[in-house]
Amino acid sequence: MSNSITEQKIKEAARKVFVKKGYDAARTRDIAEEAGVNLALINYYYRSKEFLFDKIILESIEAFRNNLYAMMNDPATNIHEKIRLIVENYYCMFEQNPELPMFMFHELENKNEKIINEINPRGIIHESVFEKQLIEHGKTQEEAKQVFLNIVSIIILPFLGKSFIKILCGVNDTGYKEIINKRKEEIPLWITTMFNL
Amino acid sequence: MSNSITEQKIKEAARKVFVKKGYDAARTRDIAEEAGVNLALINYYYRSKEFLFDKIILESIEAFRNNLYAMMNDPATNIHEKIRLIVENYYCMFEQNPELPMFMFHELENKNEKIINEINPRGIIHESVFEKQLIEHGKTQEEAKQVFLNIVSIIILPFLGKSFIKILCGVNDTGYKEIINKRKEEIPLWITTMFNL
DNA sequence: GTCTATAGCGCGATAGAC
DNA sequence: GTCTATCGCGCTATAGAC
Image (tube, rainbow over the protein chains, first blue to last red):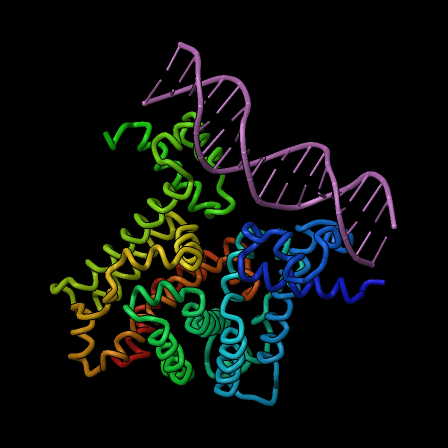
């Protein structure tokens, strides 16, 4: 059977510990303690730290991808609504779990050969409804990629670089949150202005 | 004496290895081998892996900060020239050393307590010439921070997330480079359009 | 200053009892 | 399935010869 309670508890604990510490700094002992199970059970259920990690990172990236994919391909929303939805969605995800973006980005750079092969090689933008809507607005395929890349950059970087921003702007945790929240309201307007949409 | 050839070789090797692998995955053996010196000499000169690392990361962040600080406070350049200079400068830095941004961002999130205290707590933007020039263009102090944050986001994120972008856009290394280079030309225009500068 | 040799520890993994 | 006990390795760090 592949879904015992213990197995689930280990996976949830592993997600928490891996996301917080990264692969290298995470110890199987941390995961066992977080899950409240015996250390040996990790290897019993998941064979090795690396197999367990691969499951976690793949699930994280797939969840991110599918979520984005659904928003990009909803024929019922226009460009402006899509941008707003993407912002809302990522803010919600990252405010609940501020270490998730660094986890995904950092581990993706380390383990890219393994992971990239598991993902749809055509990309998320390619032939999406969002791309088509941008083309209807007079953008080329190449420009559509850059539009999308800027949306993602402006949303995600401040979550990736919390300490960086605190240094740049000379603020503490409270000031950081104010900046982040202020941006949230502005991003859709910035993007539409930037690309004349 | 604090500047023997061996000491220098160790520091250069350590920079290379730490930037490439990160603190946790880097081994002192890697550093010794890279430097072509005996393993024991690392502890002789730098006492421990952690002391050596602290020196490297602080130097990296200080170099980044000072470079940025100089560009932001040059009274001889206007806003548009500053934006172009910042873009040119970071592209040059990151194209030569693509792993540097992830190193700085990732380690800064891990070790932030230690490092943040070493940096000017007022921030880089605060009372800079760039801020003053933006205020002359009718922006508030808060808006000036967001302008700057967007410049940095749009420049750096694609270097932080090479694999991420390859997945999003469905491109290989060649396609990635094309996208990055195309952006370089567009960024100054995007920023000025976005903020009506 | 530089080397060899090794201490000492923490890690992932597993054997084997229950 | 779950536990205890432990193996074996690789790491950082250091003692001590040269």
